[in-house]
Length: 195
Image 1: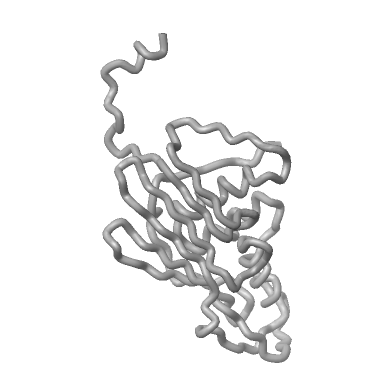
Image 2: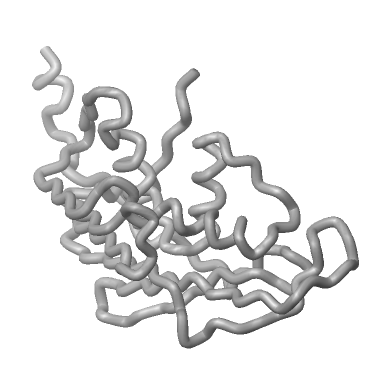
């Protein structure tokens, strides 16, 4: 019965894109993950703490392609974002996405769309761009000794081979500072935590 209802439909309606394959390296619990032959509906099944949510977070991060996504995703895991962060909290906000908290290795997320477009996102720390800043304690104007801030870099490589680099850093008053916003780099994905 269902096959008949799909007769004559266009394979990819106008504007419809889908992720057909996906890889994640050094993202949360994944040393290396490769998924191929994804379809319109995919069911993810596994035991608690087996990486189901991390897979969805990796796909969302890959398709968004900008540093703003990681603090947003952290909220689904119960991290309450403060308007002002200390340098150690800034570091932790991004380090938790690296496998085993090892930020010396680059996170690499790739996906191929149903249109055959290849996207790549690399997330790393810009140690050469590190800077020392006298950091005020959040909520006060009292300064403390200089602190080193290491920006987080998102390098997007698009299907045409061009690259865009975006960064996240910490401002002098403890606010998150981003280099800019870009449109999503692939099919939009979304998920909501269940209760």
